[in-house]
Image (tube, rainbow, N blue to C red; front, side, top):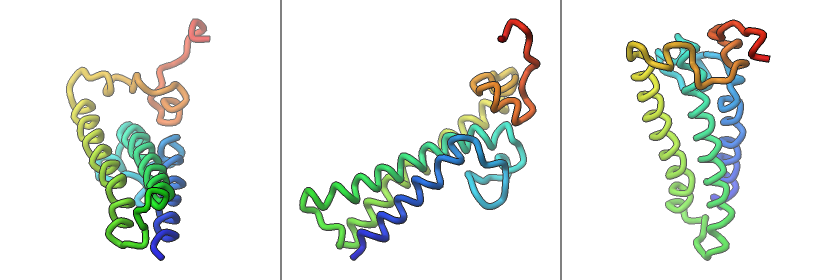
Length: 142
């Protein structure tokens, strides 16, 4: 029966995504959305992996929902083709979106005068402090 391996693989996606999404994983060679640019530049690693982690988590949730929901509709997960689709379609959507977002972010980062280049203004102060890109706090900041 193919349902249990599918559910385990889907649950693994759900467990692997949140540490990336929450920016808990520093640049490394083993885990995360790894490209030469993301591994070498924390300003790229954290935003790209935040999106990739969210997408991975959502793909796992979608696969789990399909794995539990399809048998209720009468579609058997024992058919290998159905199981492959249940796992691969959400994962493929997540990968395409992550690559698209990463390329758009890197293009924005490389653009002279871009907001992303001038201090990651979209990121929270704690994330900026972790990366060493935070502007100094003033008393007015609270």
